[in-house]
Amino acid sequence: MLYHPYEYRKPPSHKPKPAPCCTPRQENVLLPKIVACERRTIPCLCTELTLEDLPCCAVPPFQLLKVRQSGAQPWWRPVDRPGEYQRMHMKICIPVCAEVKDSCGKCYHASGVVEAEVFVKNVCSPCDTWHQQVFIIPCVRLLPGCERSENCTFCVKLEIQLEIYLLRPEPCAVRKGDKPEKPCPDLPMYPQPCHDCRPHQDDSCHWRPWVN
Image (cartoon, rainbow, N blue to C red; front, side, top):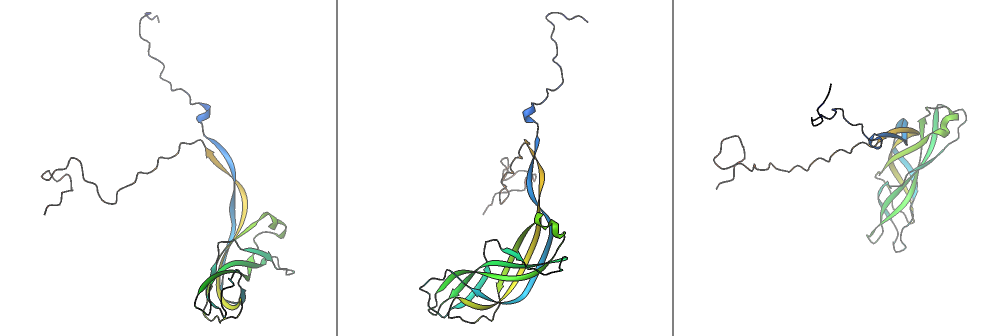
C-alpha cells in the first residue's frame, strides 16, 4: 500500500523494553537458621555470687537487693560425660548485674557471673556439632532468703529461665533493584473537618461546629 509523502503515520504501539539496569537481581546473604530450640527453667539455684566493681567507699556489711541478667551474651562449655550422645551437658556462664546496699544505706551497682548446668537434647550427630552455633537468652531473678555479707561474695537463691537456640548459617536469596514501597502517611488522632462543610448543610457531612 502506498502512502502520501505528507500523510501522518501512527507510531508503533509496542512498548519499549526496560533497560537492563532496571531489572531486579538477586543476591545471596548468610543468615542464621534455627535448627532446634529448647527452654529450661531452674526454679531455685543455690549458689555463691561474687561481685566485682564495688567501690571502695562502700561500707560493709552489704545487703543484696536485686540480681538480673546483663546485656552481655552468655558463654558455655560442655561437661564431659562418657556415653552421653543423646543429650548434651552444658555449663552456662551468665553475666549479671546486681544492686547492693551498704551499712550506711547507700546503693551501689556491681557485676558478676552466675554458673548453671543444664541438659539439652542433641539433635545432630557428634561429628556435625562443629557446624552449629548456640545462642542463649537468659532471665535471672533473685529469690528471698539472701543474708548479709561482710565481703563481695553472697550465698544467693536464684530463679533462672533459659532459651537455648541451635543455629546454622545458611545462604538466603534477596531481591535487589525493586522499587521501595511508599511510606504510609501519618493519620490524625481525631477526624478532620471537611473543607466544604457549613453549619446548615445537609447530613452528608457528619462534622458540625460546636455552638454554645
